[in-house]
Length: 552
Image (cartoon, rainbow, N blue to C red; front, side):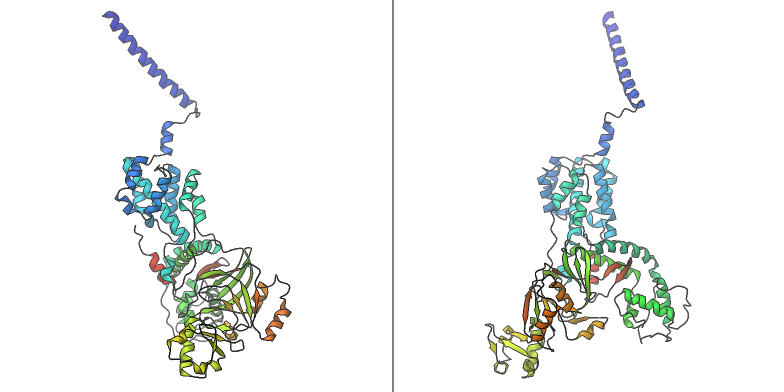
């Protein structure tokens, strides 16, 4: 009995000595800062497992799917990874949350991506049970798909906003992008592929930041009344308000704001304002300029938001060689290998006959063109004109063809019959032909093209929404020569010979050049925000759609 007692005491002493020895060993390692082994506590803090495969599988099959924006994409993503957690890497997860919080710089908002719930769960993650963490992992993945889809094709549906929007959606495999980003611990790999890469988009992000700060001064804006034009040298009681506005906008400094005179400094400021906003820069203060002055900072902020959204709709790759038409700004640029080659003023469709948004490749040029009258003009103008006046078609030099292509005698046609709507109407080449001497064709279902016009004086107007949908181009013959410049046969002399014959001549374009009909009302030029009139009133519709709360 005594021997057993002594052995027990000896065993306790050995155990105590062993424990003390181990503690001493760990203490020595800490003191010597030996980092050859990973601290298990540190390892846990860097990677917090968010649920298990079994838990994620169970949650995806229950009503949680009803809370998701893109449940099919989410389920497919987890199926491909056998329901393993995607967001266990703390650093990656926190980076993603910061990206979502900063989405506002691009005109998107954290709240639209489960933002409030993500923020609440992240702040109490350590207290979450296994199923709650699995649910959180799924919400983060759904937020990625929703945010990614918004970057790729916008938050809104352009088909609801435009009468004709015929640009296909951008395509990317969001699931594969996320898989690769998670594998390489780099979310930029995904988001840089999804967001627009056009310079205008990045410039608008810069402008949005500027106008967010400027909005703090929106209370300085007081409505300026419209009325008679104020020409240089005139006196007008509205000028003190106009001067204050010009000072607030940064166009005018150090001047007597209380006088009623339209002095030289005011003229110069007005001219600069007009130049930067697409108006005729003449220094005359008319109602268009007053309307421009009455646009406050909040309105401009919203205008930039609308333009960020539409650039998310547009193609990511415009091509190496293309013609870019800004419908709203009555302007056309030719771009080759990212360099601006030439620019032209344009006229576009009226508000009733809007120019559609689409892209196609140029195929050929027609000199001395006939004008095949489009359906809208045929129905609203030509047929009613022929019904009222038997000599209308002869006077306009318009030929009529049956559905079989047979030329008809207008005097023998029953103009009260519905059959006349199926006929083709074609105006011969000549001075009265609205297509002028040339048209540039990129075949499309909208029957839209670039063309000349006999009404060249209209290019000097501020507002040039004058056409029936097609694009009239100033100095279009020079553009046609440029498009044929790679073909030695068609130098200026040869083209002039063709024009002098008066005969319709079609020439194939061998260069591959796309035409993009786009629409935007804000951009950056010479490092300053520039705006143009929203001629089709699309911006307001976009803002209304953007302000709708996203719901699963």
